[in-house]
Amino acid sequence: MAIEPKTAPPSPSAPRKKVLFISGILPSAKFPSSGHAVAGRILRRMLEKHDVWLVAFCNNLEHTYLDLAEFSACKGVWIFKVTTASRLKFALLNPGLPLVTSARFGLAAPTVRKLLREQPIDEIWIEYIHAASLLELAPPSLKSTVVVHDFMHQALDRGVGAAPWWKRPFLQFEAARTRRWETEIVKKPSDLLTSNDKDRDIAQNITGRRDVVTRYSEIDPLYAGIKRDPAKLRKGVIFFWGLMSRPENEDAMVWFASEILPKIRRHRPHARLVIAGAEPSKAVLALKGEPIDVLGFVKDPVPIFESVEMAVAPLRLGSGLKIKVVEFLAAGIPTVATNVGAEGVKPSPFLVVANEPEAFAQACLKFLSE
Image (cartoon, rainbow, N blue to C red; front, side):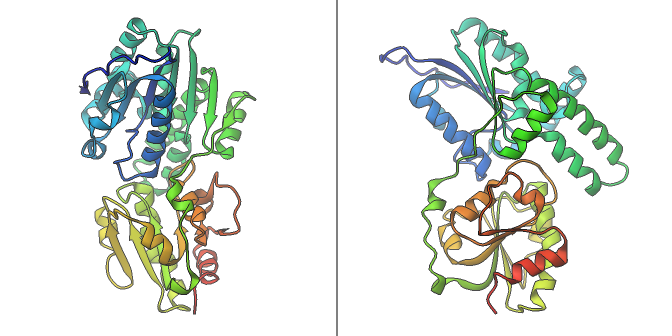
């Protein structure tokens, strides 16, 4: 269902570019996820210069954080809720589209067609490849930009090994057709941006385009301003930060707690894991207890960033730049990450990459006080 607030009054200032801004996720600073905050900052910056019509999507969880006042500066706003029922419906109605985009196309296509027909749109801007199927509705002459934050076929490929045996053939099929769709859709926009050099290279390899530009994901300046006093660090405290209902974060913490933390504690018995982030799943909550703290939503993360001895990003699932790792490094926190956790992240003297449990544990020990 779309939510349409009143259209903002026309600006008396000089003519401004008219932009249709489409976001595959809710571009909100209120939702406790760095990716949503990044999209929200891009939207706010665009509103400073242009007249913007917003089309965006949210799932059930995102919908609980929706505040239309956050988008009051837009000329018009349509927020579509993606549910299980809508996914099933539009998967059947749009069998040529992969699941990652079929519901978004089905829900928003009538609105986007109407906007392009009735408004003097100068440019269509799409954040997140989830919504890029809507680019098909734009005339070829219209300037268009697609920002790829991650390639979804990679996430599906990585999920195959972790899935039950009966689900793997479907995931393999979906990964293959998602890759085919992504290969074609990223050929279409006038400008193609990625959030990191790794995804830029993927885009260039699968499309042959040589004009792909990296727009490195911005983070909240808060993290770069954090001051860490070595004398005030909590010895042995290992930190993980993220939206804890996401499967890749849940898998990372369950794996770290069972396979890596015990190896660390053989040498550092005082080592503790602190997990912070909204909406912890049942599997994450089950980890709570000595020596693991599950904090849930943290309104002010600065005291934690200032005091922990190190951070980890033991991710095995998902794709794209992990903004949490960029935040750790910006704050000067020594961090150990897997290849998946570190992909797309610029080299840093604070970052060590390890993939096997023993190697990961050994890397952590180098940062933990005895």
